[in-house]
Amino acid sequence: MRFDHLVAWVPELDEAVRAYRARGFHVKYGGEHPMWGTHNAVCHFGLPYVELIAVVDPALTPAGPAHIFRGAGRLLARGGGALTFAVAVSDVEAAAERLRERGLSVADPVPGERRRPDGTRLTWRMAPIEAGPSWRPFLIEWGEADSRRLASLREQGLDAPHPLGDLALDHLVIASRDPAADATWAARLTGRGAAPEGGVWRVPLPGCDLVLIAESGEPGIAEVVLRGPIPQSFDLFGLRVTVRPLG
Image (cartoon, rainbow, N blue to C red; front, side):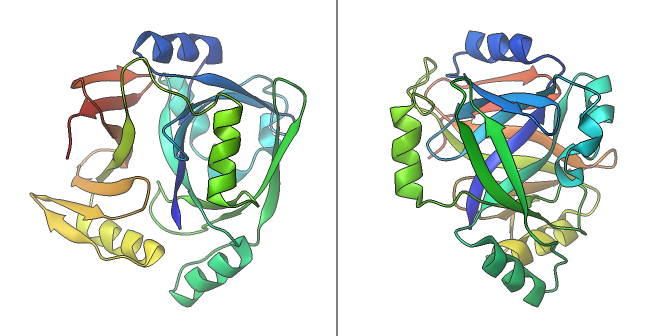
């Protein structure tokens, strides 16, 4: 299991792409989800990435998967934001069964697809986790080895150097009313221990750790933190993006 991507809702895709590019990120249009009425752009850091997703046909969005679309309308009404992310597994049925054995409720896998700008179809399978914190992720199976997928992303120019410098995802900051309990839940998901760290809780996840902080307000994904050469922090469509020279 590894971190795959963060789902970041934005009100208007072209505007979001321009804004991320202006900040020094390499962003490419990903294509359309024809059954969901949405389209996206992707910002890769190797295999892990941030997905910028926006509505293109509101008439179709009711057909979108609930585990991705939950809270999207509320987020978009206030300018965007992130409420979920995907964790990649090599066999989604087997991974779902392992999580059920750990006491998590996981639904049966469902298919997903995206039509790329060149007209080709990208397909995957995903399984929603049905109960847990509001920010809980979903499972995704791409159907090819990570090494082959990374090579393909580079061949397509999706994973490429960022003008801002050499960047890598480090962790998500997740606001929680009970960080210890949420960290314990996340540790059950990942199969890795949760550890207190300077007043917060960190749960290791290959590709991007999870850091739980105490927040009395609305819980959810508040910030994405990257390792990079030029320290900076800014808000982009309801998501705090921070670059730190982390070790």
